[in-house]
Length: 184
Image 1 (cartoon, rainbow, N blue to C red):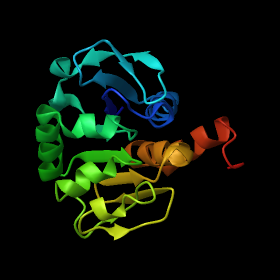
Image 2 (image 1 turned 135 degrees about the vertical axis):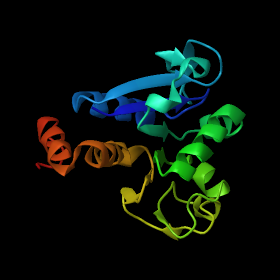
Image 3 (image 1 turned 30 degrees about the vertical axis):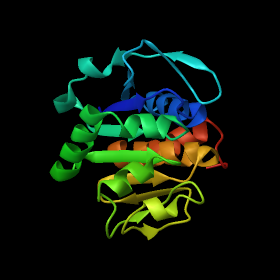
């Protein structure tokens, strides 16, 4: 079983974050929603407050298989401003451990040099932040240990790419069929 942490800063994109949580839990992955702002409830970019499973300081990073960064504004900027999280993103990258980011959040990986020479996608207009990446227009793109997604409308494809990477394509297809996603 895989363990994922979805990190949320004030102003995250609700659909991107919660779709990952929902789809991955349906696949029986262990998913934790983590606050980076020290508060138990984090408000999304559209004013929807969600109670987190834990605070950043409580995360056991050694037990995680993947870090997930949802987009949204100013959520993406709030994630990138959290030095402890950025230290962990860098450590995961150096170790070849899984990183996933959607919408504006792939810019964080681009700014850190993680996307150089990799295929990656992001929200239209943010491509300049994917420093050194080979830009993908796919809804979700997996290149090595990095998964990126383009935006809110791609949240299901992005989530299924996470399931496929951690549990295999057959499990991702099973979840897609169960939610009647594109008649798989």
